[in-house]
Length: 243
Image 1 (cartoon, rainbow, N blue to C red):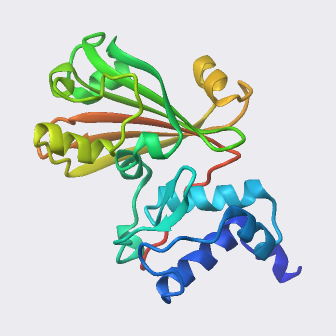
Image 2: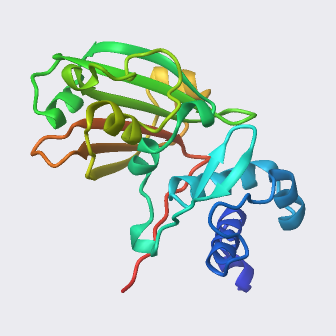
């Protein structure tokens, strides 16, 4: 059996190469990564493979992607693999306007049972819902739904139909003085709901990764619930840690 059969997927090889270059200073903090076309030519892969690699780096908090400008190395990259951003935290730091995010449903909504249980409120209590679809040039790449108590959303732009120009974490700290401190995530592999399949342009039988994150500001109950849906053919969540 050849060693190639044990080689990581091509997108993962690109992720590893870029992380090595960031670590050795080839791509210093704040620098612009090569364009998608340059990476395609260098690694001899297709555009979807490059896009997937950049999405993994973004979700892990290593780079920031600015629509129309390119991908930049985070100014303060994670100090160690154990400190790498999780999907929930990456969502909180994304500026919708810079990431080609389009709000598809915003406003007060009865809390679903799963969200009500996590927030510690009665089922169908009114909560603020913000659902945003993110796209690349070719297709939708993920769907994010933020749920939060109505009183927390008051005085913020979470209920506005326009894309946010700052990350939710930064926006809440600026408008409410609220400092989000930690996240508890639950990951599931499943099929999309009818609405998710329609928005993400997927078959009902297509696999998706669901990340349900409870976001705390130091209290006993979550301040926000983040529901992230990732098409299974575009995303693979990975981690690295010391033994």
